[in-house]
Amino acid sequence: MHFTLRLLLFFFVVAMALPSCVSKKDFDALQAEKGKIAESLAASQKKVQELDAKVTSLEAEMESEKTRLNGEISSLKSDLNATQSELAAAKKATAEKEAQVAEMKKQIKDAFAIAGDLEVEDVNGNVVVKLASPVNYRSGSTRINKDGRAAIDQLAETLKNNPNMHVLVEGYTDNEQLIEGAAYKDNWDLSVARAMKVVRRLIKKGVGSEQLAVSGKGENEPVAPNDSDENKAKNRRTEVQAAPNTGTIYKVGGE
Image: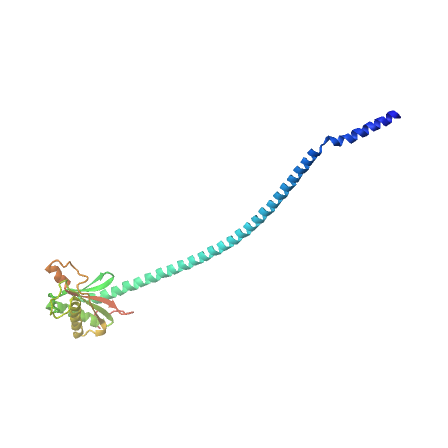
């Protein structure tokens, strides 16, 4: 019996001694490490939540931006289609106007072609009537010579046969300056006077005044350099520029 008691007492002492194998220091260290792990886990979870919220927010922003960009693209496509339509319409209108101008020029040329003493040329996009005998002048003069008068008379017949045709009579001079006391103030005045001389003869021959307009260019727009007497004589001239009245169909020849 004493042996049994001693044995039980031995086991009791051993059992009580086992927990003391783990020191308080080690236990506290484990507890501290556990706490750090828990804090790290909580921080990670918080970060995951924050990142998840950011992802959700960015996805929403991206969807909103996508919607906005799609709207802008759609608007740009609509504007592009409208512009392309406008461009096509403008090209069509331009082609139609060019065709009308070409037809009008043809009609003008046809109208003047009946007169053998007249030639029609395109000069800088304008229809210019060239007389077989150019209307040229002596220096400082507005007097038209015999050949010039005959050419103007032929032009008058064409204009009378085409009462809806309008012409601009343009006068020019060389670069010689007029002397003091001359009949005209300057080359501008002289160029207008030359054009008016032609216009008055056209009216005298029966052309309606409403068909005629006058322009003086002075010494501007020479046809030859003013470097010789011959070239200066070429620049002392009067030209006729044909212009149709709106929607006019011209007659070729008389009634």
